[in-house]
Image (cartoon, rainbow, N blue to C red; front, side, top):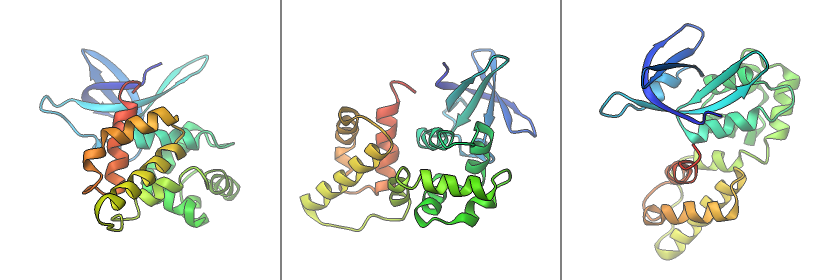
Length: 207
């Protein structure tokens, strides 16, 4: 299974399939709309693409994402009955992770039925099944975390971060390791940034 590719973008077709050149080997990866613009290149022009691999009898398909967070949401979406990889990718092309989480939290049907390929019944199923799975992401994208001074504020933010990671399905040991990795940022960073940094810490070994 391929979990991550680091290389240069050799080209992208109108169908959203990009060719990622890794050491002279070109991998065709399906990306959501606008994903290429969100990929950050290093000094050598290489981008890191987090990959979800789908193995079929007649094909091996790679779906790529700019962040571990987006890949996690993609995997959550395809866990919903009748939502396939291409539909999930279309949803993430139309809605950001935080916009999707907010739509689920507010049960906004129109936000999903406006996505090509998503009918009313599928949208209703997504809202129902993801209601308790994306709440922490909605909180993380809701704006600046309310300021609470001193150690109490740091402790409260750590608990919010623990809740966010637990909602994403990480084990307790992984959650504690991730929280510890960002402990020096708890005082000044917003929850959304802490979630991003913690995901990088937890996901890096297996990404």
